[in-house]
Length: 139
Image (cartoon, rainbow, N blue to C red; front, side, top):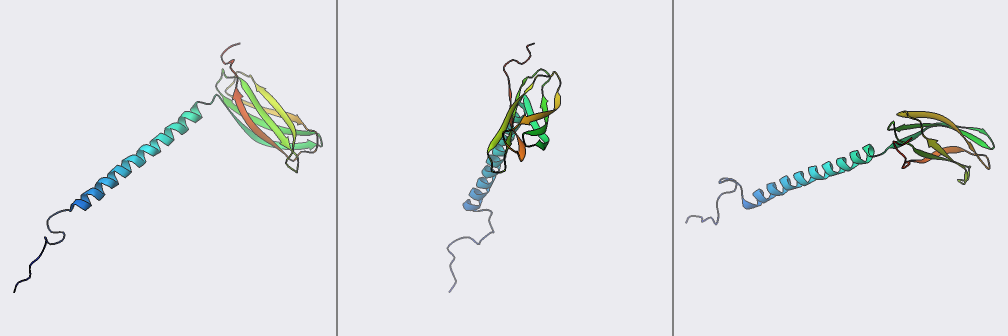
């Protein structure tokens, strides 16, 4: 007696329908993943380039029980104006000083040393943030 097979030998006559479906899913997943990375990159670049003022606290020095000196660096468009806010905290985390620093120079990069007056001994200085004013390009 001869043995009777129910189907074709495995791997002999090309791909099965399941293998084709798996390949399609991999291609679709790769395309969607690349699109997601592109969207995230686009949002990141538009956020960074959309800022008119970008500040950075370079260093700080506690000079007394009632003052802290902070070195602030601001990069901006030449016609942009705004305000950067600095604050200082004590050892227990309480805010002991705050100062708004106007940035109105007509330069692309502004370096300034600011003294923050404090109500108690401070342990640090921190840049809270910089915001552009609505008076850009007007003198």
